[in-house]
Amino acid sequence: MIDLETLIILIVTATIMLIILTYLEFRKKPKKPEYITKELLECIKCNYRLEQDFEPGDFISMYKRKCPRCGGLMKIKAIYAVEKSFKHHI
Ligand SMILES: [Zn+2]
Image (cartoon, rainbow, N blue to C red):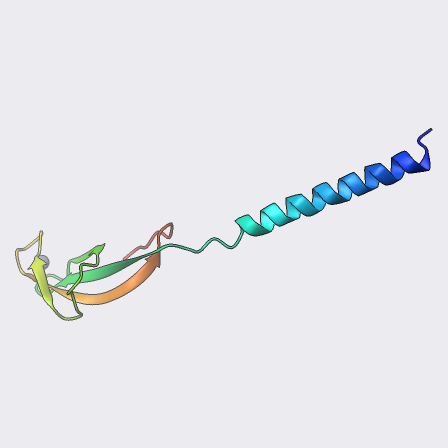
């Protein structure tokens, strides 16, 4: 038979542990999602699309590079931020 004192100690210990666990879980939770800036390139000739990391100085409608498919010019269509873990499909 458990006496009242032991029972109270058990309950108090369990409650404190629960509070600590909740606190730790709460501290862990609000992790900021990390973003990376991407840009979407599109070939003006064959409409081939390519996504790559944003480079400083780039802007929308800038001719960035040559198309790996046809050698035409590739234009920056869009610049956007995506969550690091987020898989983006063009
Ligand atoms: Zn092309």
